Image 1 (cartoon, rainbow, N blue to C red):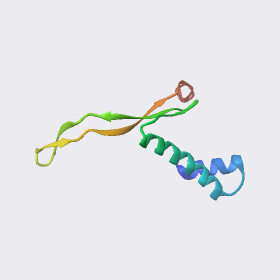
Image 2: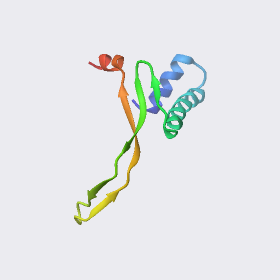
Image 3: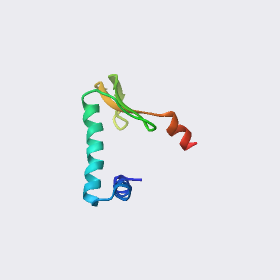
Image 4: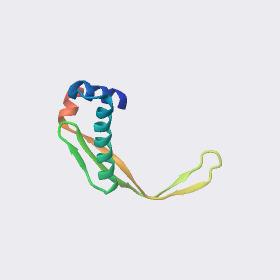
Length: 90
């Protein structure tokens, strides 16, 4: 499933135009992204929790040259599935 399929599902459920359905999906995605950028969490009941975590700085190796490279610490997105989602997938 991709974004277009989600837009079509929202359009089928709510009616209106496909442009309006796409705007609804975009608002949801933008809200999740902006909350994660601020360092917050997004909890969607039955789906899971979107959050960020800090990945520590580390030393990596370039496979071609064997040279050691310093990789800085960074925030990365994380998703924890809800129990309802885990049970539905089984």
